[in-house]
Length: 461
Image (cartoon, rainbow, N blue to C red; front, top):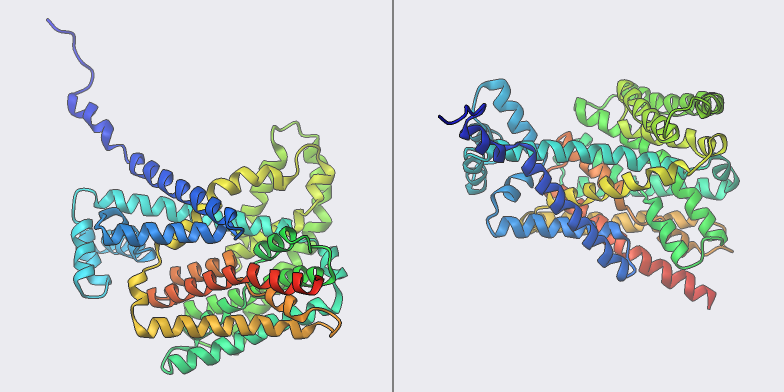
């Protein structure tokens, strides 16, 4: 008599249906794409973020053209979340929800058929996990940007950096609004404001990397560029908070706009003032608490708590993450021994932040660029995005290299991608405009190292 078996063969075979398995494969593909794409661009002396974006773009579009079911579904981005929500709330299948929400056509029927298959739920699970992970990556990235932002250095760059930063926000914003109204006269103001707001972004990381590579990071131009870019980020975050609120409500109200701006300023000012005052006291006590990895854990918790607090105040969560980084800048490193907080977070950044850029690239639908309207919008927005930032160089005195400062403010990089991703999430940026913005980000990111090298080295010679 054979011994009793405590589980059935169907349960054993069910091991292969472990829901985490598709997610593991997705993480492997995204990570490899980020590594190879970033490394290729590094060898070409270009920012790794560009390679990560291009890698995602190739995966998404080649997978779609070759009929890969998973890629076809995943590149729908936030639409997939809305499909899942409708299926859960309305008691309809994923297939039926896709037909109701996606534009009518053969593509929607194809997505519907895939979601109606045996792996439909797996694709939704993969999307949900990767999307949430990419949102956490955004918070980590802005937290790290905040850690690189020193308030004393911001004060030291003086009036010139302020002029450059203000022009670098106002000029692209005005040009963007005018361009959107010219291209889409019937478009809502909230949508126009959001696209114009995306043009105000500046990528501090890309500019700083280029200046270090060129060994020009100690010049007056470099100090103004980095100081203005930091101020630009603060102003752009306020702009993002305002236009996001307008996009969600669908109304334009001077009172609500002023209140949103005031909330952003109060949150940043209040959190910075209170945080900088109380953080050293807290850090000294944590240093003696005997908790393993206390510096990393405390920084991690504080960043997420302030991000949650910002969201509760009606602002974007990334505003809180950025403020947390500014508050903790050098404080934990002075009060606690061991590696710096930036060094401790470096492995986390390497693991998840590149995935965000690959994920954004996957959602770029090149077939959307086939449309003449999208190509015109992409070219027009890219042109005014470049002009708007180059004009910021006029904020410098004539003795400085104004071209170098303007070109240094030009890259949108990860900041532009973050803004575009948020716009896509709240539904104000459609596939066509998202593709146009990605084109804008790629062009400005690629041109910046070339333009800076030309202007700085030409003056030096």
